[in-house]
Image (cartoon, rainbow, N blue to C red; front, side):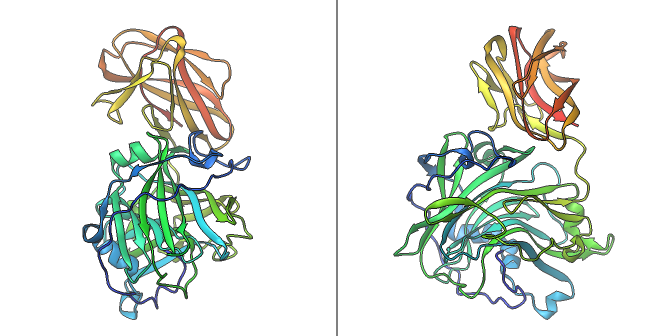
Amino acid sequence: MHRRPLWTLAVVGALILTVSPAAAAAPPPGPAAPVGLARPAADSPALRGSVAPIGGVVPGLTGAAARQAAGAAADHFRSARTSALAAAQLHTSWGIRFPINASQGLRATQSVVTGAGTTTTGGDYVYAPTAIPAGSACIEMTTAYTPTGPNLWAWDWCGGRDGVGKLTPMNASFLATYTTMVNGRPAYSLDEHKTSTTANTWTAYLYNFQTHAWDVYFTSSGVYDLPQFPFGWDMFEVYTSVNPATGAGYYCRDLAGRAFESSGIQLSVNGAWTPATAANAPTDSVNPPAGSSFDCPALTFSMVHANDDWLDQIGAAPTSVSYEAEASGNTRGGQAAVRSLSTASGGAVVGYVGNGTANYLQFNNVNGATAGSRTVTVYYASGENRSATVSVNGGSPISVSTPSTGGWNTVGSVSITLNLAAGANTIRFGNAAGWAPDLDRIVVS
């Protein structure tokens, strides 16, 4: 939640029904990402210099249904930190501030923790991130990790509504439509900006990687409820209780090994999108806080790029990262197509790769933390002995033998060694002389 003294915040106004958002003005164009930044896929709105069309509306619950679904997670997000709560619960946050009143919007790409271990226990909630632009913005976009899994919220801060105006579960359908792989993590691209000055109307959008358009998420108008508080981007906010078995917050165990990255943070200033810097988006403190101040000694904050790319890591990072072949951020050339397969890790594989140079699958944004040799395990399905060619970052391809796995519904694997550059890499699979196997995923370790 945006920076404010949480122990003194009182509930502002009553909760009232909000209506579904209507189509609004298109987001203004954004500049290309600065050289050297860890960046989204080439299709990401952060890299396009022209205005994408407005698409549809992001599915989700609104009004009373959204508030009911949010439940205790919203109650604690809003809650005052009273003396009665302080003995058992900690509600704190850390991030960057947007002190420029001329700013009328923000953009960012935010990773989503997925798969097993994304639910919280012990009454804990993690809000990573929460984002509200400067300029009396009505909407605070929040990824909330709850006992039922992650949800995306639009918190309505105008007209005394003070509550979740829209909620969307971050399920498989959401991930397939609104995320792409960024630095080895699924991530969504967000745009929130003022769409009417006279009514103080703000609209939040998500980029749809299937239709290549901005879908409207939520719209709100009215008088900003909290003019006395600053605003900004919280990379990490928790509501937590200490687990007596570990001496740390329950979330510290539940989300161990997980990372939360906020990248490509931009401000709309005088009609232009500008990357967040130390000057226009200073941090809450000179140095990131210690994880112990969040009841999680294993939590670390690091700046990937000042001040528009931040990484929060709970404990040691996993030694390997998996990339799904069917992920929306990948590039499929020619006849390459997704095929449903229940035995595959993501429920699908990509086939019709090879038999000419036009048919290929390229994994984008494969993260090499440091330059050097990495073991890449290729998972695939094939009813016959085949082979594939593999190239990194457009380099010379190598041939990889992929023996039959025993059937087209059976997944097997082979391991190869590839040299990756530091940061984002592309890995392309093809076969100019024959068909390659159906590809399930790759695991980089």
